[in-house]
Amino acid sequence: HEEGRKEFARRRFGEKAKGDLERTNEMAGAYASACAAVGKELGLPCVNLWDQMQAAGSWHSFLCDGLHLSPEGNEFVAEAVASSIKGAYPALEVEPDPYDATVFGNSGTSCQGLEPDGPFHDRIN
Image 1 (tube, one colour):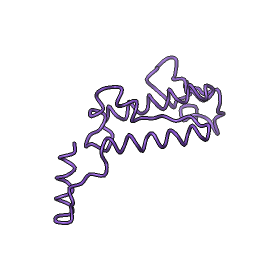
Image 2 (tube, helix red, strand yellow):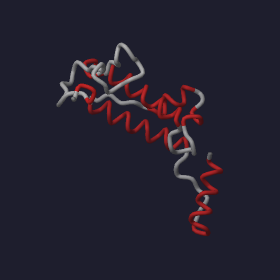
Image 3 (spheres, rainbow, N blue to C red):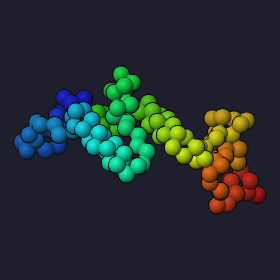
Image 4 (cartoon, one colour):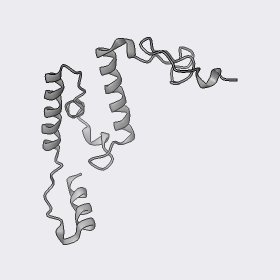
């Protein structure tokens, strides 16, 4: 991914491109660790995606261009965030429709910790 980013910088910035990458995997790890430390200091839950992606062993597959999430990366992030919410705030866990577990956001979906502001779209005549 780093060679692709260098080539992009050369095409975009021409002679001004230095060839140095400030967004390396190592720098992303340092940034993620700093964010996790702030969360811990404030007593807030934190999802350290960098650590989790590294532990998965295939972190390249989570990124489509070395920076932006791929479809697999979006799924990975959604699962990590949902798991963190379930662990830190169990009442906010969204339970899928018991009749169609692939559907979120219909009247069968529930969350004990939040009252809906209005009826679900499939309950409106």
